[in-house]
Length: 347
Image 1 (spheres, rainbow, N blue to C red):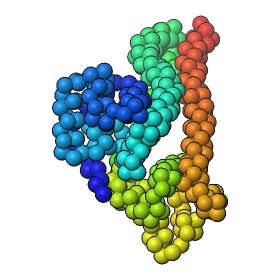
Image 2: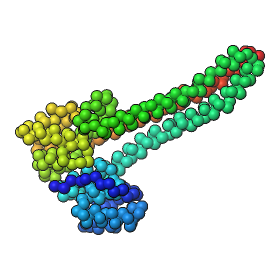
Image 3: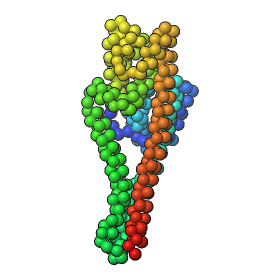
């Protein structure tokens, strides 16, 4: 068995990646071989078609796999993982359409989440810049006017601190982002088991990651089992792949239990990487003799749960940003009206 090794070669840019995968699947179903289908599609989708074609030819002539070729074309690890599994069980043409659908689903969710965050964050940055100019240009003039008409005590009462609310909120946002990036960077340097133990201790992140890992594991294992591969061989493949270290860890631990004679439903009960209902799905699949189909169904159920939870998070995050901006605007009004009120009373 030949497994993918990450290449140091710079990937080529592919336009309309979902359409590229769909067209690749269609051409292969019509009888085109993988290299011939790529030869037809690269002039349409590659930013530098000649260089991309030369790179693809180099990979394939050297005995490279479909996953290695797609890696050269800039696809992410989830696509490469699915492509290597499809090639392993000999159904690459049929699987590419499913891979394209999954890729499109993920991309739409990613774009939706980005668009939800982009507008309020941009508005907060604009508010920060506007209030900074307001604080440095308008407030000093107002301070001088109050000092001229009234007293120094009235002038010092100008609530300049209210105009620093955007600074406070933006600082908190930057702190959260820097902390999150630092945590992820630190986690990447640790062994997979240590990373998993740390993530699972974080309430929200642990719950979401548990569902995500289970979704991936059940999808890939279900795909292999549904194609007719034995459980032991499928777990061996998953623990030897190099795309996802968490799946590698989970498959390795489950494989050790299965090799002692434990059924899969019992093996998963020993580990906390899975949701509570995972075991019942596997038990039902084992009893019915359709474990592969049951795992694929469970993977789809988990993906729908993840999408619902992300949708709920988006419905909370955007109003929260707008609330922050509203507080900043209220602070600006108070910063203007309170000095005016004091000035009127002084006159």
